[in-house]
Length: 472
Ligand code: 9WN
Image (cartoon, rainbow, N blue to C red):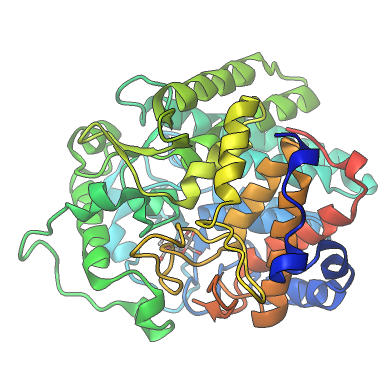
């Protein structure tokens, strides 16, 4: 289906906010977004939120750097440099870098639970988690460089040059240590690695893990001091998260042992699409700094072929996560199935199938009155939950990723609806961590950094004439 054949803008029928007015009136919110980012800045990196997440999170920092780079290129560069100082010798970028300046016992599980020092590959004297998060960083670095003001061009290029080998090592780690079947797809060993922690995308894989009695030392969930229990993962899921953590810790975070023994071993289409997107970014970065882009293009091609060969299910016309332990697809319809839109070479027939699904009543219900895009789980599913974390609510980072994917396939109407909806959510509820797709109310923590950063990026990039928007 071509751009001209897309369904008409639904605003007239359903009340989804219109694009141009939404953009025009976002100025006051852009100022607040900047205040949120500045208030969460520590001098070296940006906290995702003051109370709930008082340390550095890997992929939060990448999103934050992109948004911040529109007005403060230096801090944006510092954000990623700080993160990569904690990169492991294996190339793994840890999901959390613990901040010694954060109040003690501010976050659970903290460094005493993770005990990253048990791995010889972990950085000395710098406690981190022992798992990773989606490798969005090369793409983020390229975006940060693109936003650099003209008088900082040389500094930005020198920064890219310094970061490049670290970004390459991050990608190499995933392509080697995390590909036990040699398919070209990287597996995750913990739902926290996907960032969509309790997503129904891996309910069957994750949900069958039984935590043996006595396997966990007594603990208290500090997250529930800050956020309503109904908005967060259930206690049962939390116990499974911690149990997996202890198994990985007891294997001293040795990749071969963890991958061979983990009861959770899943291949996620979104995680791998992000890998692919970052390989394309690395090819561009290589071109900018005089390195050879060929290996990155080849790596992207390999992931492209594996995504389609391994995760595309033609009879269902969708991408599914694969549970490698059971050797079966995970059938739930979640936001991860749209991740491959980030692949610039995705065949048009598959793009059309994904867009049909994105416009279906599962992800784009045409209700009377305002409605909001894009829920992280099928709104028609019996266990769709508008409040609980990744089991239904809208997050601005998934919206940002879909917006990028849709634009690069020329699906501008849908992409613009997503931006308009994001602006409306923020206008209604502020820079919340996530939002109820049914009424737009905010959930999770407030003054959440990546919501502020990605809001900034979507609004400012959308104000540029379309012919300046970049591809890839
Ligand atoms: C566990 C910081 C992180 C995000 C993740 C999000 C959430 C942590 C938690 O917060 O995860 O790492 O305690 O729930 O799921 O995507 O990076 O914002």
